[in-house]
View (cartoon, rainbow, N blue to C red):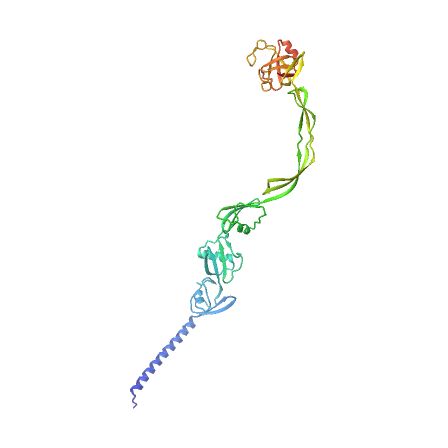
Length: 390
């Protein structure tokens, strides 16, 4: 019969507990391992041109990637989607997003994008952050440029402006800047004398209008006529009769050297630099009547002017003239626009008379003479006579 000491008894009890715990732990491990092996599935992920095998017990592609050793970002593009259930042998394509720095309205966003080009990245980030970036807004890089790691993308909001230049009206958008910078941005090259409607240091505002006037100078040789002058010579025929041309005149020719100033192609100024006469003009010589008296029947008839008139005769006994006077010998009818009523006249072949009557057919250089009888009027007929207004 064996007797155990108290100390040995306690030692055996402790050893037995450790052994039991060890057995339990080992059992749990093997059970978990068995469960893992049973539930685990292997998928292939293509990332940055490499294929990585991922063994996971998680149910979705997104969970598998999150709990793998791969760096994964929400902005990465995953195909099929992150919500897809994991199945053994599933092929997953991961397009890495790139870190970028976007500056809009002096606010910088440090973020990531999976877009390939700057234009696509702007669309992506504009929607994501509600920035409302427009196609007309200015960007520091071409929109077709490929996005790179840590790329800085800067956006300047554009404003509408109207530009008039070279006969064109251009409605365009441009980021706020000075007139000088705007002209450079738009590729408008100014000549030395061109005019701009706004000061070069003026900062453009929305819907402002900018006009460029092209100013050019050129020197030309121009030929022009020198108008001839008329020389009047007094002649011995009655005053009032038509002038008589003694000799015709002819224009001369002059040559001028001028400096023309044009604005948008239209002449606004000219300066004569020199001129010379190529051929001198020839004066026209005109005879003008100066005679104020004639001799008729031994008497001198003085007059203010004379006319050649078409003369007819009439006889209406007891009639009354336009002025109210009774008709009689020496009363004549005239056109008041030529000879005023009441004027004293002398009619060749008729004698002294007074203009006191008018007639519907008496217009212009026409005169109607009163006769004492129908026979005398008929005998007179129609003839051209000299009429002297006294």
